Image 1 (tube, helix red, strand yellow):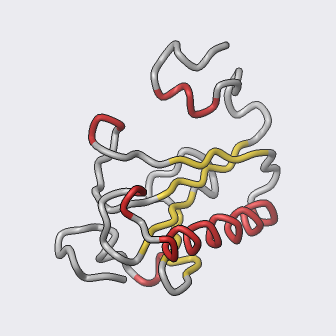
Image 2: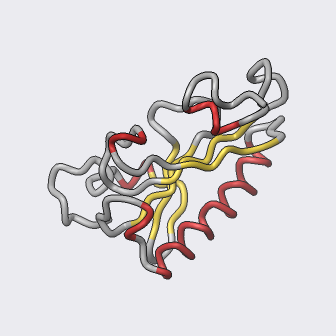
Image 3: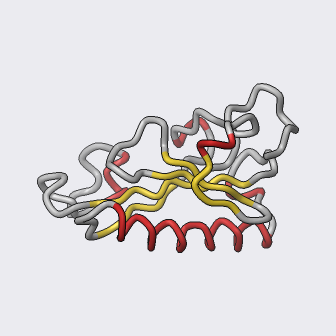
Length: 128
C-alpha cells in the first residue's frame, strides 16, 4: 500500500485485512458493513476520489469488483444483487479522502422496497 499520506487509514491498512489485490488496487471487507460481505476496493496510490484515478487504476478497481462479486456470490448466500457506489467530496458524504468503492451485497427482503437503490441517499427522492 502507498505510504504517501501518513495519517490515511487506507494507506496504512493492515495487510491481514486485504482479501484481494492486484498491481494498482486492493480490497478489504468494510470495517462497518451494512450487509454481510460489504467490501471496499481501494487504489494503492493515495488519491482523493474516483475522478483522479488513472486508466490503469480504473481497470484494476473494476477487475477487483468483478472478482469480489464472484467470491461474494459463492460465500455469502443468498445474494441476489449488489449496490456499487462511492462518495466524492464532503457534500456527497465522503469522510475518508482516499478513493474507495463500496461493493454492497443485497438480499431479497433486506429492505422493504429496494426500488431506487442508491437514489435513497437523499430521503424521499428514491421512490418512483
